[in-house]
Image (cartoon, rainbow, N blue to C red; front, top):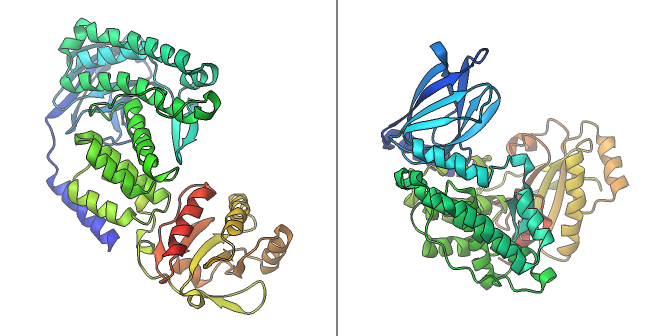
Length: 464
């Protein structure tokens, strides 16, 4: 049902989307020599276009017309080097660059040129960070990225000194607001720049207060942050603050693991416009990964409110993981040989919650996962929950030896490589995890390595 629903939504989206005026990007790449083409990459968070290959013509000239309906970030690639650019619908951006020193020494002009001139000036103060250079910390059950500098500040400084340094950095950024180019920039970019500055300070302060409350003997609201007006979600700092503030506010009433519905309703009440749309989509993605039972209801509600949302693609990538197996459909029965002798079928556990893990003894991630699962089993002793492992090992004796050597508890079944259960459950690789509710239907499954998320879901299902 849901796969059909998603298919219809995207057909409608593709048929009825209203695009903005074409955005033209043109210019000259001097000293191109062996460079025959350049590239424009969309922002992978919610870019509206596919990767563009732009040929270079005589004297390095190029031109591209791009249909976009909202302002967005992109990457311009020349000879293996990259530059972030800001694109607005209907803009006409002229770029004059030199391939030998790219991405330095670029001149922007035209409508939209002021935006990108200011963007590069901003990055001189606060350079963009490559994904693999970021550090991640888990806060309220969610992974958040931090730059090396911000992480260093958090480790080194006490609260008041930490805030002073962040405010000094923000003050340097704010000088751009007095730059003559700022008044000539598009309203979209003006909002983006303000969102970067506000997001930098608010995200930095709130994350510090939550991470180091115990170390510094402070409360999470130590910095007494004022609420931010709806900003531009092209800003990563602002996006991260939206998510973190939503989780923190929800946790005040529900504790360290607030429900997706609580977060969703808060976002509806506190945020507006595109910021609200983005945050709601992130809450749904997080709910799918954590196996939250409320995912279906929230997803249907989001589709009704935002049928042509650009964030649907992001949701689809997470939720379209053989979605026909999830969300209320009955799990197919199976009957497999057990380690203890005889056969075991799924139907014999009706009325209990069943956790199923497909694995193989040669699969290191499978073994690591089963090791973590033992902690969950200990926590859920004497509950109406059954833990089943199903091996796809090619050799049954290897499977038996592996289970006995590692001392795994629970029910252990052998499927081999060709049992129909693998096809019925659409297992494409191992480890693959499934949870069956008491009524025999599929529940969402946590899509991360945190045992705590699995415990939360199993307790909810066991209590129903």
